[in-house]
Length: 325
Length: 134
Image: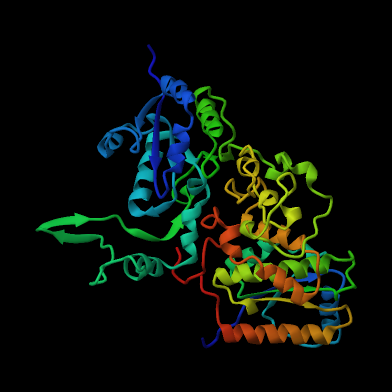
């Protein structure tokens, strides 16, 4: 019997949702498991770090890494897995674009550590101790990986062959990515394994969108009741569909919620947040400066909204500070 | 901050503001050499990505200069620029870029003096703010 292709799955700075999306393959997981050998998957199976280090370079057919790169340990593992794998696939928004965790780039490292370890009301840390790379505990030296000053997408630390977008990706996209590798019908390197066009192109509410959208203020979903058959933008609700890659099967729209942009920018766009602010501003139906300011101010956190999944891979990558590497 | 000379990138519309800059030149009026000009067909052509890219690549300030409202060669391109300006300025603030580092103004083809004034003001303001950290 010929040997089955070997596959690894790894997680970095992530919430676990991408792992869940693999489990969501349900019965298809059995098909995948029958076709491949999963040789490393810390969240589900008991393999050790040394097992990976002992592998030959290029021994793995493919590795799916989810999560952003925030800690030294994650960068280290990404580099090892890159060497051991013939194909490296960024799995989910965080690995693809930096994801929600990338929003930390709006704050300096010190502010984050102070907030989490000293300022939050529930913390009890009278000596104000922050995480250390090394410390002595009962006469033994214990170590922690370092906490980088910038959250990075996977391709900002290693070469990535393919991207599966989404927070989390649909099981269909994951299955298709794995089958693509198994059946050796590879797309050009660097491909994002989803649609090329914007979500609006396949939106189930597409036909309800008027030729020209004209709104006077932006509403948040809790502030209004809306017609569940109509384009969200027509109702003044921010939907990032026009600036977001399609291929998600419009899961949020079908659940009657507007798009938040997790599939990242469309094929020819570099900065999803810039494009989002651009199209949203252009549908405001006013030109009086005071009124425009009011309309713009009706979005309380434009940066956090437009860059919810892509701050780390945006043009500026985060708040400008002299130190950001 | 001694010796700091800000770099300012200006997107000037072909029909009014670029002509306005020419008018300043024709009348031999001097203006600060801090401005680097990119001619665009319309201020409405200025994609917010251009602005972010400019700040990333070394600009301390960015100016968008277009026709006065009502004078746009494409009817309302300058108004699109105005709408985007309001929103992108708020986004820039979250990136740690002061609002004054992005300026939108209207310069007609005959307003050579206003062009000089606007560029001088902007340069002076950038000198006060100092270099953009990156």
